[in-house]
Amino acid sequence: MSSATSLPLTDPALAELLTGRLSLVEERLRDAVAHADTLADDASRHLVNAGGKRLRPLLTLLAAELGDGGRREVLDAAVVVELTHLASLYHDDVMDSAPVRRGAPAAHEVWGNQVAILTGDLLFARASVMVAGLGPEAVRIQATTFERLCLGQLHETVGPAAGEDPVEFYLQVLADKTASLVATSARFGAMFAGCRPDAVQIVTSFGEKVGVAFQLADDVIDLTSDASVTGKTPGTDLREHVPTMPVLLLRRRASSPEGTEAERELVAMLDGDLSSDEDLARAVAALRTHPVVEDTRAQAIALVQAAVAELDPLPAGPVKDALVSFAESLVDRAS
Image (tube, rainbow, N blue to C red; front, side, top):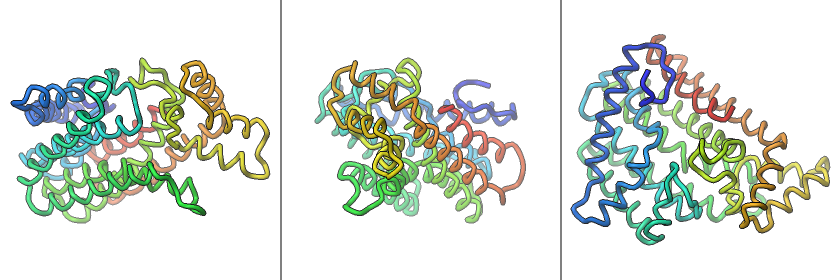
């Protein structure tokens, strides 16, 4: 099938349908970010033009096939979730000091932090305008999702309180910062396709679990892939001392009675200055071979299996199979 969906779908008719609808979403997304103001237009188009997997709108379109996926509201909802995602990326890259996004310089590297933040705000505004046309319930869901996105970023920034388990804290950060929008993507699809409330709840729970698994897989990819594959500098989170699951699991092991001197030395290296590319490469290489990376991958796989189990009540068929493929493909990236 076309790479437009980035999914190994086995049903040709469904693959063709989703590819066509995703193309419509892409067109409407580009229209949605257009501005009469030249700076706003250039900055807003920056990440759209850089491409991306469009996983969230794809999930919206896919979940909608459990009902009437051809409704205009479904396409609008797919654009809304991608606009929201793109807006969050502008903010995230500023906070994480990420130099590259999707193989292109991050917006703050081109225009500076203030313009990047304001561009993210503009995209949130465009998403809000579009979601208002979908009705009060959609506005409420979008607002609640936005709140969780902000809380996830806030909690990641300040870290766990004294006595709080850092691993459980991190999983909640991922649920809020990443999984909330993935869950809403699936929820909007089923909702606006006219599905029954039980089906809407099933895909929402599925999306929540898949979203956390997706981010755990990203934690693995950040250490095991190269920049030409991911479009991001390996170890960016390590350099900025942003917690990831492998690092948190390493800290837990190093501080336990079973912790080795080598693990404690690795923690000390990660806590040190990783501003030089050589030091960062050494830290990435050391962590990448540690068992905590495989432990993180195993957590992601377990969450995907739990997500797939959520789908059990849905009728068998190509749409359910595609949802399973969607979940499994997110973890396959980290294999």
